[in-house]
Length: 94
Picture 1 (cartoon, rainbow, N blue to C red):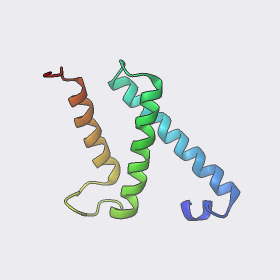
Picture 2 (cartoon, rainbow, N blue to C red):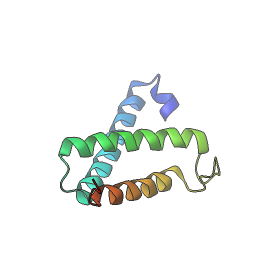
Picture 3 (cartoon, rainbow, N blue to C red):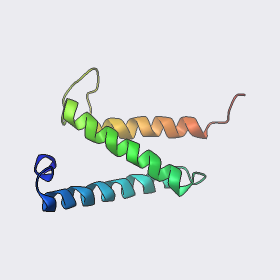
């Protein structure tokens, strides 16, 4: 679909819709995990997470090993997000 969307307007609209829905879901999960964050911050992180998922998919595919990553890209991103959000919740030592 991604390759087709480069030349087909209908496929491009479908890709845009898929990515928008994906960002909305991820932003909602971030917001639920971090109610102290603004909607803009949640949406910004969701955009970066979506981009990372897309990028990892190109390099490691689904359920392949690459540079020590054994999980599917979305599983690896979810793991890193959990670690990042938990770290952000801890009080600063400063």
